[in-house]
Amino acid sequence: MCITGVLFSVRYIVTKIIISKVKQLTAKTTKRKDCITVLLQPTDGISMNSSAQKNLENLPWVEKYRPQTLDDVYGQADVVNTIRKFLESGRLPHLLFYGPPGTGKTSAIIALAREIYGKNYSNMVLELNASDDRGIDVVRNQIKDFASTRQIFSKGFKLIILDEADAMTNAAQNALRRIIERYTKNTRFCILANYAHKLTPALLSRCTRFRFQPLPREAIEHRIANVLVQEKLKLAPRAQDALISLSRGDMRRVLNVLQACKASIDKPDEEITDDLIYDCCGAPRPQDLETILDSILKDDWTTAHYTLQKVRSAKGLALIDLIEGIVSILQNYELNSESTRIQLLTGLGDIEYAISRGGSEKVQCSAVVGVVKSSFEQETAKIHS
Ligand SMILES: Nc1ncnc2c1ncn2[C@@H]1O[C@H](COP(=O)(O)OP(=O)(O)OP(=O)(O)O)[C@@H](O)[C@H]1O
Ligand SMILES: [Mg+2]
Image: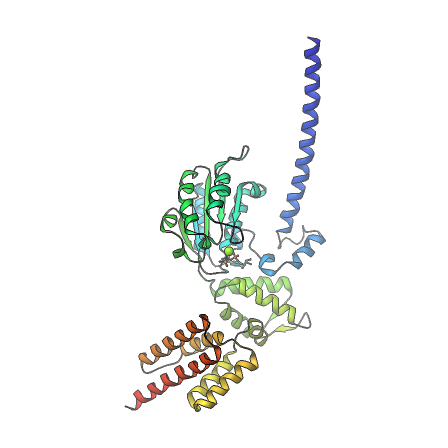
């Protein structure tokens, strides 16, 4: 009886010690997690201590201004509203987000996961992107392990985010099919890709698809306005137009160019001009493109070729950027015959392909002059005949 009493009291003391240790540990972890959460809140300047603020200052703007909630994801209202409805009804399907770069796919799924799990994020979410190995072994081991284990104290499903999934091997995608079906009870998959056609049809049919479109002009303007206020920057109206048209709906590009512009202005209150935007993008200015086109249309071959080379080397432009600029200007030209436009665009398309396959820029420069000149000569001949 006495021995049992002693045993009980020893057990009681040991249990007390363990409980107090666990409490200490939990307090430490929670503190650490809180720190991380504060670091991830760029707009919440008041609650940030100075070192957190300093860390934010050093971040690239794409991270500093990454949307923290689904409401911060601009220009994708249809997608965001539908996902919210799924969430409210508690019936989140497997998701596939696809679309061009810099449109908010990764940001949206991370914001969604943060809204669902809050501080539990790291336990409940497995994030894999192109920098991780994602061959068949990872699907068989890491993904399967994560999907098949249950969290003791957490209710609901876990989330597996497969970013840049179009870079996964076909074998890995095939292995994923069965895992998606088998663990649907406690796991949801979100597959992110630029091109849906690079995913296997079987994988596509298991997910609800959402296309992220290039950000519309108003959405980019709205976001730029926020950033300008926070960074205390001034942007000339023509510079904003140039930035929006050069970004082609890619918000990452907008933020990178703005950050480069801020770094290159001398005084903090200096206005960012359109010239600076073109310089930071390495894109040709519209007036340079007009000079080149004008010379090709009016001058002889040698002068036109010389003008093209001169502008190209003076401004350090890549021929591929010049071709893109010329195509967008030619699209607004009024032509009498549709066949001229077809000939022009096919010719320039062939040159672009040749450059991407490693063709010599010198030879392709002559080809640009040749294609534009011959197409317009044919147009003139047709008018006179
Ligand atoms: N819809 C958006 N609303 C607000 N900011 C955005 C949006 N889309 C992109 N951004 C900004 O661009 C950055 C990059 O976005 P994100 O990583 O989500 O793009 P993505 O669509 O995943 O691109 P990729 O296909 O290259 O992976 C974000 O940090 C954010 O600052
Ligand atoms: Mg992404």
